[in-house]
Image (cartoon, rainbow, N blue to C red; front, side, top):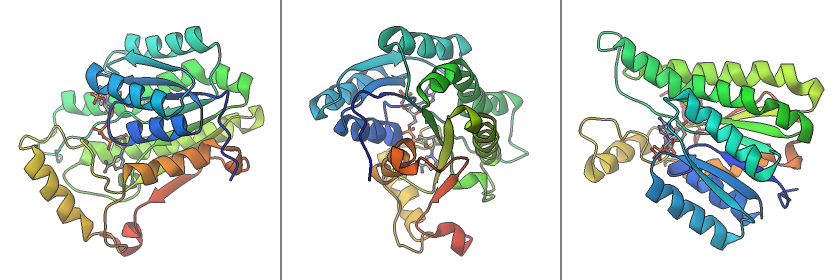
Length: 258
Ligand SMILES: NC(=O)c1ccc[n+]([C@@H]2O[C@H](COP(=O)([O-])OP(=O)(O)OC[C@H]3O[C@@H](n4cnc5c(N)ncnc54)[C@H](OP(=O)(O)O)[C@@H]3O)[C@@H](O)[C@H]2O)c1
């Protein structure tokens, strides 16, 4: 596989935790320079330090809350100001909260769409001219929820369907200009994603993920590193002929329709 990322600038949103952190470490392993975003400064700096010790050339950390569009703009501006270019954009930051139609509030609807979709669209819009210059590429982190209907997380499902459409439509728009756009669509990966559940703690977290293991024909949940591997593949020259794909990473779960 052609995974030479030396000299490449990679921006990863939501790199302070879970899948984003694992992706940052994997790109660091391959010698990229990194711009990493998150809200939790302690966690973000810890990931940045690990990336440096793994071999990342330069690591820029940017504290940004994607509820604010000014913060999204700050991420784009600081990345280009620091590195002068961008090769790969990994749109990973995301949130989920419980809620069916009855429970839903419009504030919650706006919040999930803002973090999962609007900030992604805005950041991509701001940085696309830079990716056109470098003939770079984008990997969006979607979910199996974009194609499977899970009751109780209505708005999250909808945001991830929007991420898939965004991926495919801009893949078509920008293929002639040399920018590829793909998505990874994971099933369950043990992270802090469900942090907004009212009863979230280390015990309930173990229970939530234990219950999900059996939904996967392969017999287990995925790991953040397995998702990072797929992101790295899409970002690499090995997938140079691939664009507009939304890759299910689900241990066979969608085949079994559970
Ligand atoms: N874990 C799964 O089972 C799973 C399955 C399918 C898809 N995904 C997707 O994978 C992506 C990463 O999630 P994860 O599982 O790694 O969860 P995670 O551990 O909770 O990480 C989420 C990341 O997003 C950042 N983030 C959250 N709210 C933000 C906001 N308002 N502004 C800016 N950044 C924000 C977090 O930053 P701070 O921690 O610094 O606040 C963190 O770095 C998400 O898009 C999620 O939908 C996850």
